[in-house]
Image (cartoon, rainbow, N blue to C red):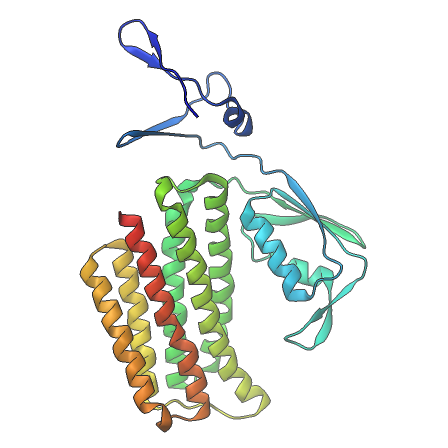
Length: 319
């Protein structure tokens, strides 16, 4: 798309805005736009919330998890109104091995989505609407909170296992829900507005998606430990070696947090070295661990791989 520069008097030069873009973002005469210089580029953006419209989906044949993921994806995509239709009142919950009501599953997911509310509910449909007025300016503060919650959740896992504190382990589920809510909100902001530095949008999207994977791993490990006590009446005790490995993984999370906000390629080299050393230590000592320890450690070691992918995305943001 090319635009001709219009000369006004001796000092003022003007260029027209694309009509399609101004209509999409509701730009009118007299509105103020932010203009930023970026090398040979000029970036023009508005704080107005673009209208993303509504969408209607039939969820009749979806299981509980699938319909919840669909709602989250449509929210992240940026739709302001989501209309859901269904022709039966229940759906299958595979993890629990039972039928649950569709409405309860919808409510559970909506409660995890910042600013979303169910504004209409009938026997065979409901309407979800975003009532927030978020802006991309909120992105950075929410991201900082996500990192801190992630580190807290992993610390709770280690301390809960060391002390046999099942109440502390149980709180990880709430942190999981909060991280999921904040991550979905930041992803929604990226989809609706793009990051203030547009070249970083894709990398940040990947980092947030990776954070969601890490909090899932931590939560599943905590649930496994709790369920063993509740179902099998067996308390899982980890050896000092296992605790040391979990602590190394925890330190890697903290090191990534430092790397993200204080970029230095030497920090990435340290992350890579720690990952290799820890994975090798697990391979050397795995025969000495119980089956429960092996399951937990092989699950948690995936966090190292995810952190490396997040580090690559952070490097891409820098250049």
